[in-house]
Image (cartoon, rainbow, N blue to C red; front, side, top):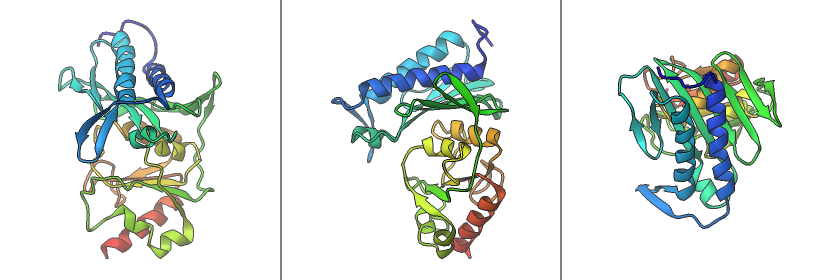
Length: 268
């Protein structure tokens, strides 16, 4: 590994996310060119500019590390032990219609483990970050420990495709389950900033389908939840990134168990 400074990886992740968030904030509200990616999916000029800025920060500090970025794809050796996962603007459609619910995600995978990660809120002036052991909120130049809590009963459900486990499991059907409505209150914010909110005690849980291995969208939030002490599994309670995949990230074991029961009702 070629490291040209002594800055810890976690602080580098935070600094890179902050740099990307500054670009997102600066370009907000302006006329933005769109780059079509696939049916119903696109990037804006802000996605591209924020990603370039983040990659400049990472490559200046860690020139030998590999990178997988949402817009520019993968670079560096495929079998490298160190790979940065970058999502420069999570919530592009929100942003394009001048909705401020977006996040900037940066994570470092070493081997099979995310060892450093940060999720920045460009408009809230906050960065949620972890060194793999502690989960912290950086705001106004100070850091405080994240504390998960089920108290809000708010559960974010990701309704964006793909849905690889349909029809056996469909996240949208959770909203109609009587057991879900009795205990929880659904939210759909369409940005993985909401995963960081579980670690911070602002959401009771987050649920999504999909294969999330090396996901530029989810790696940072999952690492934050794990470091904060949340209960994190696949959609059937299995170890993350195994079996059916998906994600249930819950503030505590009780919330997790209740969500598992609702999910099981779909497959009975």
